Each structure stands twice: as C-alpha cells, then as structure tokens.
Amino acid sequence: MLSKKMQSALNEQINRELFSAYLYLSMSAHFQTVNLPGFAHWMKKQYEEETGHALKIYHYIFERSGKVELEAIDKPQANFKSPLDVMKQVLEHEKKVTASIHTLYELAVKENDYPTQVMLQWFITEQVEEEKSVTEIVETLKMVGEAAPALIMLDRQLGARS
Image (cartoon, rainbow, N blue to C red; front, side, top):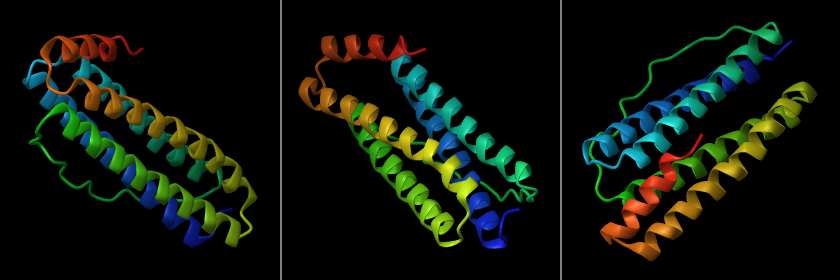
C-alpha cells in the first residue's frame, strides 16, 4: 500500500506528465501551422509518450491500492519562435521532468517503498533517453540554423519517427 505522501507525489507526477503531453500537442499544432509536418509528427509522438507515462503511474497507483486524484492541467504555451527555440524549450522541460522523477525516487527511498523505487527506475532510464534525443535535435538545429534545405531534411527525418 502506498503512503499518503507517496500517493500525493505520484498524483502530482501524473499532472506533470499530462501537462507535458498537452505542451507537446501545442507544439505539434504550432509546427503544423508553420508547415513543418515532420516536427509536428515528432511532437505528436512525444504527446503520445507523455500520455502513456501518465497512464503508467495512474495504473501503478491502483496496483498499490491507492487513489488517483486528477487536478486541472495548466494551459500550455501556444506561440513559439524558431524550431531551435522550441526544441530548447523541450530540452529544458525534460530536465524539469527528470528532476521531478529524481525527487519522487528520493521520496520512495526515504519511505522504504521498494516497489515504487523499482517502478521509477523505468522512468529514470526513459528520461536519459528523452534528454539525449532532444539534445541531438537541438545540436543539429544549431548546426543547420535557419537554412531551408537542411531544415526540410531534418523535418523529413523527424517525420519518419515511428
């Protein structure tokens, strides 16, 4: 059974994951609007992943006989600058998510909640992958700048994400 403190923290993480999904969906809409369908596709996949993360925690709470308490999701940003600016924001956001996962893990250790520690190991590994993926896109965008041919090629590459 989850402690009240752990349950509350996991519910807060569900909200963070759903906000992340909502933010990435907003970014996807932006990229669709500026005719970068590959970037839009990549962001929509991020949206789907973040929704999956929220549901993973949602189901875990029930597995531990806890109670899910959903809160309102903040409105995400809707206006963005360049693709590089958007991806830098994604990287900073993912770093915040990583920090929140680490805080959850620290709480699980403090509470001697071994099952939650095990579950959170998956998220820790996932966040390493998330930050690496976004960092690679940021670095590529720094190299190509606003050059249309290179941006179009990167857009196609991101659009191929399955």
